[in-house]
Length: 381
Image 1 (cartoon, rainbow, N blue to C red):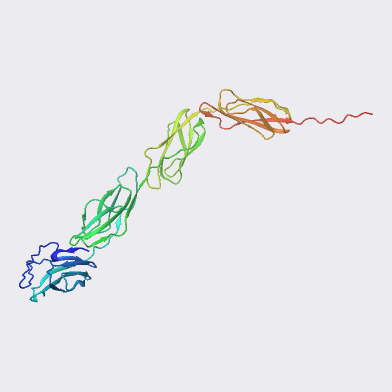
Image 2: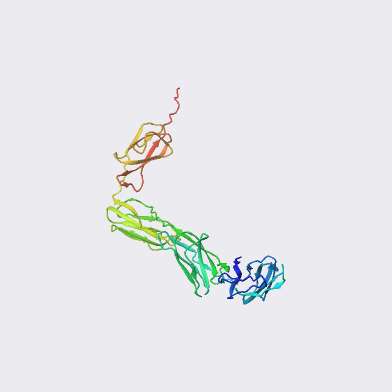
C-alpha cells in the first residue's frame, strides 16, 4: 500500500481554501497510477468542520473513509483513466459546497511472471553461470536478489529474455519485477536459480610401484568418471585399457629404471583435476628369495633354523599349521626357528624387499616331517 499526497505523488496540486465559500480549487490534473488488486490511500488536506463526498467513476471500490478527508480504494479493474472526484461541503457555518476536485487514475496490471534461469554447478575457479529470465516485458524493471538481498541494479525489460550476467557466488538467486510506472506493482518471478561450486577431483592410482622388466601389470583409478587421459612414460607399452572411457590401464614395462603412469579425468560435475596424478614406478629385476634348512626332520624336533638372504627389509615368514615358530620370523629377521609338531608334508615360506623391489611371490620350501618309530614290546621266553 502507498500514500498519495493531494491525489498524486508526481504532481504538486495547488489547493486554495476559501474560508468564505469552502471551495477547493486544483490547478492541474495529470494521470496518476495504481496497481491492480492493491488498496491505496487518497486524501485532501482536512478542513475542520467540513464533510467530503468522494465519487469514483470505475476501476475499483471506495472501501473506507467516505465523508472524511481520507479514503481507501481497492483497485479491481485494469485500465482507465478512472476519475476520482471529491467535493467538500463546509458545514460548520455556511453549508457552502466547494467546487469538485478530480484526479485521473490509470490502473496498471501486475508484471507477467517469467521463469528464473541459471540453476547448475560450475567447477571451482571457473567463470560461474549466467542467471537470467526466460522472457521480459517493456515498461517493467527487474531486480536480481542473491539469498534475498538485492544484487546489482535494476535491469529494464526488453520484451525478450534477459541476463543478469555470470554469477560465481554459491547460493540462491531470485528476481522481483516492478512496473516502471507504478512501484507498487511488484511480482516475484517464478522459481529461482541455485548455483553450486563443484570441487575439482584428485585422481588416485593403485598398482605395483616396483616390477620386473617385461612383466605386465594393471593400474587402476576411480570408476564412473569420463574423459580419462592416461599417460605412460617411454619405458612402457599400453597393452589394454588406457582409453577415454577406461578407469584401468595395462602396461608392460620394457625399460629398467624409474618410470611413470599418470591419469586425469572429469568427475560427475564435469570438472577435471587441476593437474594429472603421477604415479612413480621402479622397473628392474625382482629378487627371488631362497630358503635353506633341515628337511626331512623328525616330528617334535625343535631348533630347526631356516635361513634366507641377509640385508633385506620387510621379511615375511609363514609356517604351515604343523609347525610353531620359536624364534626369529620377524620383519627384520632373515632366519626363523621352527618346532614341527605334526608329521607329514609341511611348508615354510618367505618374501622380502630388496631396495625398491619385492619378489613377485613368496618362496615356499617343502618340509618332510617324519613320524617317530613305534617299537614293539620286548618279548622273553
